[in-house]
Image (cartoon, rainbow, N blue to C red; front, side):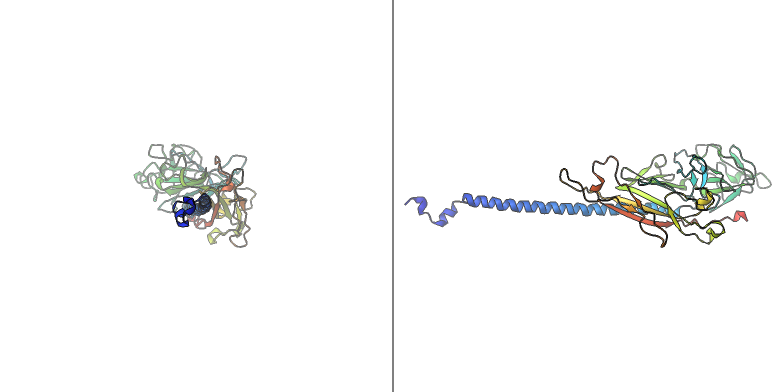
Length: 404
């Protein structure tokens, strides 16, 4: 009998695994490793999806909160009927530009001074501007007493109480439909002689006067124009919101470094949309001092007063609220096999689908969420839509005691 044959089973096992046993062990190990890798990959994908959803939730809420906050303050100091929507001449050394509104006559667009101006872009992101003053005097006004053609001096009817050197002013014709002009007070009203001395204000050009060129650029008729105080220039709240390359942008008169070009607020915002909420009552039925309400939604101006002209000063007075939507995108991109298509979002999101207020017809918009230059298909991302309606709280309050 050979030594190998005479070994007991215990001794043979002590010398190691057989080839068959080794191959079986490797196969079992490979199966376990494959299962573990798939479990980890699935867990990682789930984690990325959850984190992406959390990011889009956070970014979308920040964006909507910021924009709706501006909407809540919009119109302060601009709520007089002759100011709302007035086509305004505006010059800014900081290079902020008023938003472009509809053309009133011909093809020339206006630059309306209104609580909100929507530059609608169909399925692409809108540009939304909110304007507000900050005068502590509220609605201090003066009447222009002499014809103004050009120059830095404007004659007024009384001592300019409530006005201080450097304040931002707007001159507006009392007849709705003319052009307005914005400038800064360059002289100190306290230096004027008391009545019966002449009362006037100056808008001379100077390095300390951001909005002055030494000339209003618009002519006004004495006894038929008013001058309004919008407050200190550093507090003038002219804000324009936009979206570019997946970033929410803000251009602002009161944010340092954001006048000439917009600054980034948050990322992974692919679209913002807005609609005007119009009170469509006309004639004597429209009494804004008694309250206004939304009866129709529109992304563009309409002939709200029924006079046959779209976007005139009276139409702007019929804007009661603004409807806002923000579309946020997840950071995580769906991972698919080569040649396969993404399935995270099969259809483009819609905004403004629901009726609000009740019985007011919704005007839904399908949003183009593709980002220029992105190598990934838009379907590879998940999206969240955030919406709100903001009443323009200054729209109904129109202090026009100067008319009495």
